[in-house]
Image 1 (cartoon, rainbow, N blue to C red):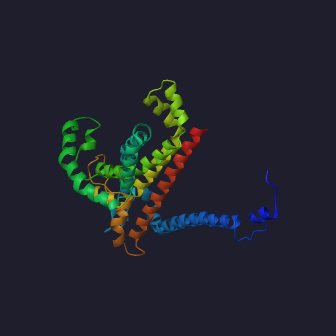
Image 2 (spheres, rainbow, N blue to C red; image 1 turned 60 degrees about the vertical axis):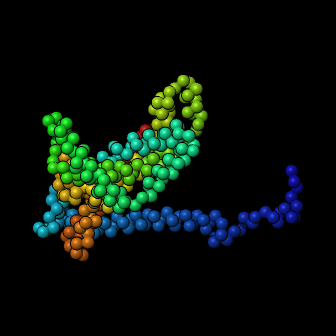
Image 3 (tube, rainbow, N blue to C red; image 1 turned 90 degrees about the vertical axis):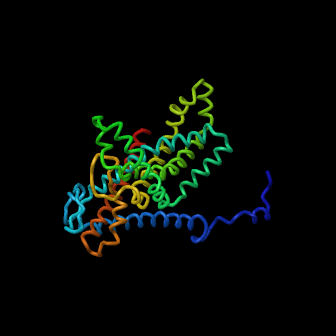
Length: 322
């Protein structure tokens, strides 16, 4: 042990009687201010959307949420049709993207070689950086004609007389609709979900996998009984992240969903979403008008849906941990 001398004592950092504007106190104040700023911004968004849409709720009452009408000429508005399109397209996107993201993440972390995983992982991250309007243009020029010329005619030929399924495929083959919008959204949210799941699988202790393999478990059994239970929190977080991106997506959906305020069972009929409706109608809404208040009310409802989704995910995780 080296004895303390005057030189070593002078070399030690001075941590006693540190002024408040230096060291840990300043750092604590800065990070606390950042957290408070986030809360203030979130609260400001809720207040602005809530007060802005108050006139619509006052005019139509709570029934605004379940009214299936959007008629600017008669100044009659309802949120049911865009909410139906938002939830429907998001559900389709998550159903398609979840197995793709999980399979890609598991393959990158457990099967692919390190060199191949690095290249494919970088490509997935680059896909997440593509602007949404590019996805919309790609969907408009590629997916919409494919749906109109091949997918919907084939599905109508196979299932037009099948009870319970024919209502999902009926309608004119325009190429627009919930399924087209869901496909484009699935391509958009898959990279985000894949990145979260890959990071979750990567930090899993290798000993858990090796122990399972040592006991004679197959790769399927390791994935189902070891990887999934251990990574459940991260997987749910990735799904919630992708769902939040899909709920609020605007331009990509506007290109391919058809922008028609209607409700029905067909996956190929033109629909609308809250984000696309706000993007299309907001420039034509005069300040102080009932139409603008209705659009703000739609935004407020969409925020509530996003909060409810996050709260449900956290409750699900907490109940499983208990």
